[in-house]
Structure formats: C-alpha cells, structure tokens
Length: 309
Image (tube, rainbow, N blue to C red; front, side, top):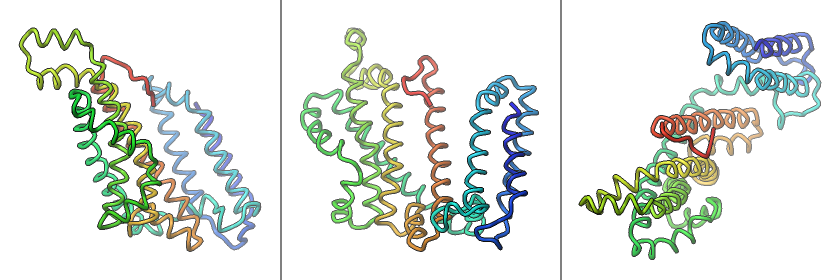
C-alpha cells in the first residue's frame, strides 16, 4: 500500500537531483509541487485506509498501478527536461504540461464550458430521438418497417464521415457538431432498445393482456423495464462514441471548445497546451462514464450488467 509513496519520493528525488539540460535555464515550479501534493494526498489516503476496509482494498489493489504511473511521469521528465532525448516542442516536460492550465485558466474554463454545452445538447437530442425511435421500432412493426433501413444506413457510418455533409447542410458549425454527437447516441440506443423490446418475454406480455392491461401500459411497465440493462449498455456505447464526435466537430468547425483549442495550440506549436487539454478530456470523460455506471448500479440493483467498468 505504501509503494506509491516510495515512487513519489523517488520521482521527487530524481527531479531535484538531476540538473535541467533542455533548456538549461528552465526552472521547475509546478512538477515538484505536484509531487508534494500527491504525496500528501496519498499519505492521507493511506492513513484513512487503516480504518476503512473498502478503501484499504482499493489502495492495495491499485498500489502497483499508481506507483508505475508516477515512475513513468518521472521517466518523461528525465527524457525531456533532464536529458533532452525527446525534443521540444513536440515532447514537453511534465512541468511544462502542468503549468499550462493555471497560466491559461480563463481560456481552459471558457473552452471547457463550450465543449460541455455542445456535448450536453447533442446527448439530450440523441437520447430523446433514440428513445422515441427505439420504442416505436420495438413495439410497432409498421414503425420498424420504415425506421430499420434508416438505422442501418445512417447508424454504422462513423461521425467523421458525416462531418462534411453536416457542415454543408447545417446552418452553423455548432449545429453540425450537435448533429454528429446526437447521431452517436441515437444509433446504439435505438438499436439496443428496439431489440430488447422485441425480445421481451411473450409470457409476461400475454399475462398483462389477460389482466386487462392496455398496450401503452404493457410497453412502459413490462417491455421497457425489461430493456433497462440494454439501455445502459447502449448509453455506454453511445457516450463513448459521442466523445470522439465532440472532438472531431470542434477541431473542424466550431469556434470554441477544447477540441478547437487543441487544434489552435498545435498550429502554434504549443504542444504542452495540447497535452494539458487531452489530460482534461481524459478526466472529464472518465468522470462522465463513472457517473453513468454509478447510475446503472443504483437503478439495476437486481442485476449485474455484462459491461463492467
């Protein structure tokens, strides 16, 4: 459990002992501070884990992984700032990456807000249209007849392929981005929901009809609850695809967003900002997926999903 503490101490010792070579006059400020903060955090976690069994299991289980991450970050520091084996501007040091956010906090806050707004709009539209299409296709043979070809033609096409068409057809780049994200959500949700509704146990449906239940009641109280596991699987697939659609749409169309900021920073050769932006994307996407799976575990207390996170 104390292995990460040792790794952090090694990283701090190495970065303090080795002189800065590339560039020689560079003074590290953020990376040593980051290591000290992480050391304090992990010592606090270790102390708390002594009294919390569940936290202790997590700390022991992930000790090797956390230690390896800190050692790899220090290896990057050695290969860049300490030796110059990896050259600027394409391979910035950890200190350079860490300083990007506090020194450009306003730009990151503005672009992150724009990205989250675009993602939220696309996800909401994708959820509404996906649920509507999935319910209709799963319950109505007529709706399935008309929507199934559309689903098979549009759905499997990657978001990147739709981008030129979306930019031409939509009145603005923002709406084109919303379209790409909503399609990424709509396709798996429509497919999984309609399949799950059609696969509902016929005996349960017949039993509900015998008891006098109406068709809408059977749909929303029998078929839809049975489809909940497939809905969460579809949301996982769709949300993952929507992240890619978000970055693609921002890099090639909209005027604000982290994807746009990555493209702008790379054009100016400021790759430390690119690395920092990618790191923010990783954290945000990881948290969103975790929220989804926490919601799944709360809703589906009776069943473990096939997709684990």
